[in-house]
Image (cartoon, rainbow, N blue to C red):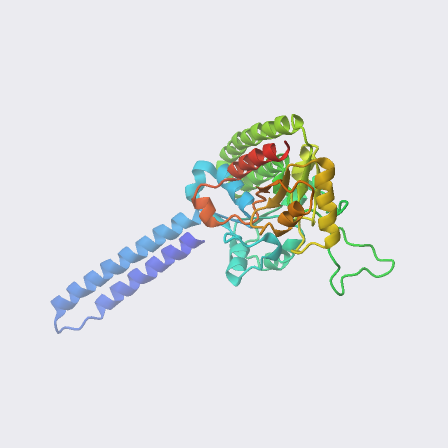
Length: 358
């Protein structure tokens, strides 16, 4: 359609140029004819360039992702075909998934793309309205929670963790079932990532059938890297003397610890907006540090570490290290430009994990 419109515009401009030349009066005929010819050639050249650009863009595919892991997976699966793929990461400036609000421009990108990939949890409630505005009725939409199906876990409150207070108007009425909240941080499992990459490759094949085999091949090659790293995680965790992580922070790593049979304690659930822990929570976590003889207290990226420091200062030895695992919720486009990848973050997390489990 774009190509046809561009060619039509070129034809219109060409006709206009000829008409302008035909209306030149008898006075200064030679000069007018020369000027008209130059204008016509300029118009034709501009129209041709526009047509070529539009025709080229017509073959491109547009993929919009919400978060960094999705973006990086797509880049790897697209591979050498990236010159014909426009890949957008909506949360590219460090905004957390749980507090993100799309702009009008974001909605337009979603509405007109060929493929849209999002997590699908409570934080993505805005997506339904955005998809209602879709002008591309053939859009392929990938919801990560839908892809994983029964592998998606409910949020859990473990011993000592502060449960989030219900906001006004959110309490379930008598007899009404409480709405299940799912843990959205599915990307922090390498096995989940492998399943999702299959879905992305399949979706790209539908959008761009000519390169479907390439996308499948790239996905398989990338999954080999995921599987290799998964094997390294299994080796490190199975050999670890300690099997428990303690977070003085939110805890978005439920999928990761479940993959490798680890236990955990934390101040808050992964999607919590809380920043201050109660005396009871701090006292419980400090006691667990003593009870288990833990050498390390964990936080996530971007945290101010105040709770972790308080836990450290309220146990017997007060000599724990404070270590950080990256949940990739604050990764920016600048990080991507600097070479950050999903695999590089997960490799760095493994290195931290080895120290944390000593």
